[in-house]
Length: 419
Image (cartoon, rainbow, N blue to C red; front, side, top):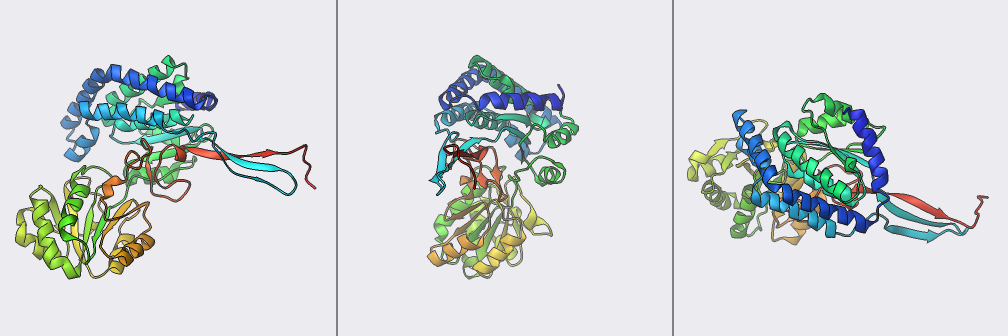
């Protein structure tokens, strides 16, 4: 099927989807959940075949982790569909109601965006997450996953389509581009006749490609260098497991910390503690400036000197930059210079410093005394997410159900005529 035909079918399906009641869309999601549960053994087999090919092709451990499905992960993916089904549906909500002096009654009503084009790399769970959020909000979606998980994505998307058919919904509300050729991405980016929004989930090259070539509005997100600034007032003992969580809990995630900045006043005491803590957990440390001597003294085998470009690297692995900074202002300046647009944190017991950091850092998610790993639709109570937007229009941070809607004005009069 051509991309043009996929777009035409998706647009037609989106018009049907928007006409279903919220309870009916919830019923469709439960049918999708049941279908995926039934197909779970086959999905795991397909994923293992994808992983086997990925290993033969020399894929690194960080990417392999993103590709991997196991029983626990797949159960979580399927359960998340039930969580999305149970969430309040924002479509149809009316707000900002008022009556003008001329008697015209105005209000805004939330409606689906229409057709989403989502381009993503590696993670097969994204196929299910996006499809479930799109179904819940009455949207349709055209998906293009990475070639590394083609078997997994095809089987997941085909099973979702089966669930839609079982529930009496149009199966073309969820479509997957099965051809790995990059040319199909370029065609999707030009499909403004049918697609209402492009959402790329991947590295900087993919984001730049979509921003440069798309004739469809693009939501940029998913890439950013994550920082934690350890203020002089921070509780050092409690900071260690927090930093460990931000690096270790899922190193390949986009919200894992990439750079730890330590205030000069505590650097001599805290950095050796941090070095021993991370080295014991097999984390490689890229030390900058005076931090190198402090780390090399306690963990020489896990420490190397920083180089040009390291501060701009999203590691996606058990690697982290460590550097010393003179002040909170210097830390903020560093963040602004090195890709702080996603998830960034301060560890501090000084309220004024916490407030200054919150006000000065222009990231999608700003944390005080919390791990950056919380930047996630499920953790934020959104059920799942389509992406984490790092731009400012129309959505920012984890994009859940609300962010997949727009609104229209409803204007009612009594045969009103403008004077």
